[in-house]
Length: 173
Ligand SMILES: [Ca+2]
Ligand SMILES: [Ca+2]
Image (cartoon, rainbow, N blue to C red; front, top):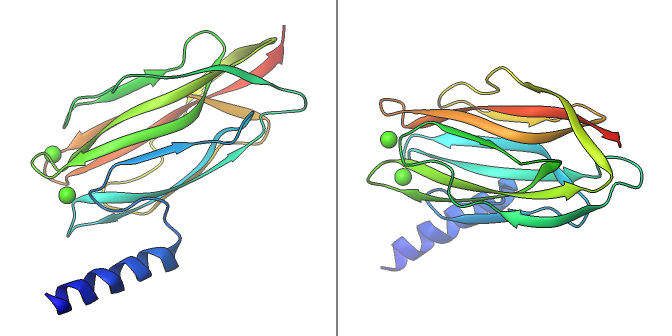
């Protein structure tokens, strides 16, 4: 028992040292500070868990942009199935939440969107896939742009998910 505890402690300390916000196989909820959006996603895969840990960073979308009417979606994907999600109207992504099940070795995700009041979300494009299966991932939203959507698919041999993101501009309206 003690050695198991010691191992868990060591792994936890290592995880902290790596600076990941989430833990393998565990649920997480991440919400950006007020008036900021999800702008930077980092992730690492481990075969032992068939899962990823994540780190997220946020930033202000622009001068004087206020984000209001924030709402969480329901879960936007089934286990092992594709995921596509876009905030409605002038919504931008400000939070991400997820849980893992070892039976599927996959995660279900939901997102928080806030409305950029007085702005239009326009000139949207999906990125190419930003990660390969089982590999490190790091994606930063280009300066001056925001994230409105996410798209991804799961592979049951790799037990991992590839991601792309919908990136747009905010223009006053
Ligand atoms: Ca797992
Ligand atoms: Ca799976």
